[in-house]
Image (cartoon, rainbow, N blue to C red; front, side, top):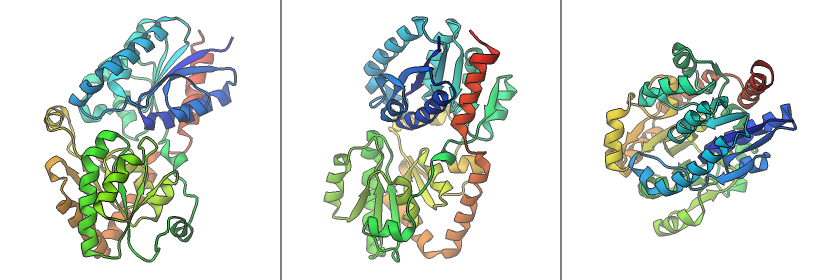
Length: 382
């Protein structure tokens, strides 16, 4: 009888990674059954979705309280699944606080626990690593420096490369994309990426629009594109765009082509900054939380840069604007500098070109799937 696996992906990015991993697991063991928390991508990959993760994404400490009821109900459901005794393994994808609690429960039930896309303990300090060491059987990490951190704690860990290396592909060259998106390829194009969560749209998009108005005043021929995240409904942004009076091309389903055609980007902090870096697009990263949440984060946080691009580079390759510094004037100032100072623009592109080389080899989901299957069927057969 084939094994049943429980997989937990609490956010849209996790849904994408979970889908790729699930497909790889099923390719290796066609009879394996996978159940869990995810979204449309995991559902299409063959996962039996027990709970859709559509409304589970949250940024910040205080913001969690707004969803505490939903998260508690989901937790009870998954706890019952873990205690049912029918699963041979638990796979966790990012979403740290929720998933680390599940790791504890599964460990007590003697269910092997695998973590793919590890908690960012290098941001929040190493207090969590002791818990992970007690409850997780094997870590599959996607950032180059994470392997050393976990190995230092005596954990079974493997650097599998970053999943983005398999996903980031354009389907059109600049001329084709310009025609499709009704843009002039000879004029400057700026990409607006306000994030994948409603919370980010409310906080950051108005500032982006105000910046776009000011940039348009300085560069009348400038054009704007907005690659719409799958988790964001078009009507969440269409009203704001209409009120702004700006002509912004909202692009669905062609995210990488939209990023690729842009000369530079204004982007909310998150995994998309790394995708933009692989496409070698200069950007300004903006990040803003509820003020109390931000103060709490500053007390706990152990690093002063938050953009994945800069963290991997080990220095500020692209500028970051945090909290009160997230103003349209500051964003506009950087954009105008990047447009007018060609030497600076090229230097940023050269630094971004180094990022991809640090992200390991392609095939992260396949490598992770092989590690899990080997553990379950060979090393630790149950």
